[in-house]
Image 1 (cartoon, rainbow, N blue to C red):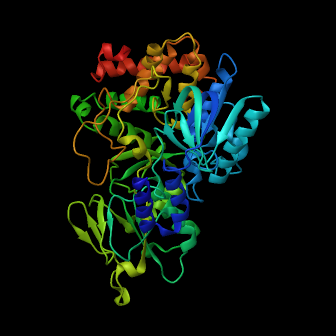
Image 2 (image 1 turned 30 degrees about the vertical axis):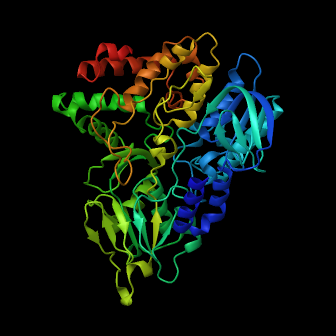
Length: 533
């Protein structure tokens, strides 16, 4: 309780406008509530009604050998996970045809010309699924505003503790996104500094000569800069943008408007580029192997770089069209890079970096006023894929002998919805033992033990391709899935599977996987035992 209380107080001090919502979350997380216990029963208790949890439930209902009952919990009032907390102007990165659940096309819910569903459209989609499941005769009970404490019990919105007699418990929160609205910055903030999450940008506007400093170069930071430029019309000379690591950006327009490069195709591109360069052995122990793939994709118009002539060092699959990428490139004079991450914002508004260097914003002391008086700072540094909620936990098996299932990342971009469906499909295969199911769910190795970076982890760094790299884990998992009776056929009929989205037949998908494995063995990145592991 005290942890939750002080967490809420800390977030209030950083983002006071959001305190009402945050305090409700803190209270619901407290065990010091009514001890009156109710009891319910179900086959599956699913905790988390975001992209992974909703996808798991949908595929479970479609493929379970017998009808099942599901109780679906979420701390938010409605399904949709992080979309409930996202900023209003956010849309999907990728076309809607590769997002959502197995049974229902999200693209039917969006009016966007590129099928980039908006926040409201996605939330409407997830709400409609609850109705659709009920109309189809499925027994799904959604409980919003609930705090889950483990041991199959939760506290509902009224404060009543409810025990659940469930055959299995599914934790769909393990890869919950970190959002600036709810995850405070790792850097310190001086007194009087106006720091906001991107959700509050629409209310700030561009009037009265307001200046902005956007902190973070990922998709959230990119969205914030685009919103400032396109919607609020803020001039470039009133924007500073701190980008610690330049990102590769996925293109979602011609020459391949209906194809998003997938992790399996990316490996193929890396092998082709490596061979074209004469297969230099030195590339295998550095970032050169993966960087050669990005260079090849750039030539094909499938990725962009933020600053021409500057090699990006990070990739998190942020996706933009050419017009958006060009608008961000126009922001180059406003980009602050080469200094690393911000460690603190001083009370005068100066930027203090992790290496100890300091930088005053261009308009500091203009008219005798400090940067802090003139500037709104936008916190876009949460690191959506740092998964802070589970980062401190030990790595769990997907399927446990205690009847617990944890949805995790088995396959890379695009993945969240797809991974939920894969875990559910495997759960429905009664002919597979627990050990066989887990053998089909290789997980990336946990981070090496050591002192955590003071400013938190940095995800998406483009480095060497080791055997435990998530790309190769994805490849090995897919190879196993193709070897599992019936699974390949299901994958290539699944709207969430990226190779199917890109038009690959089952035979073509299998051939690409085998070609990649053979190429990686030849390059020395996999040994034959690893290849078949």
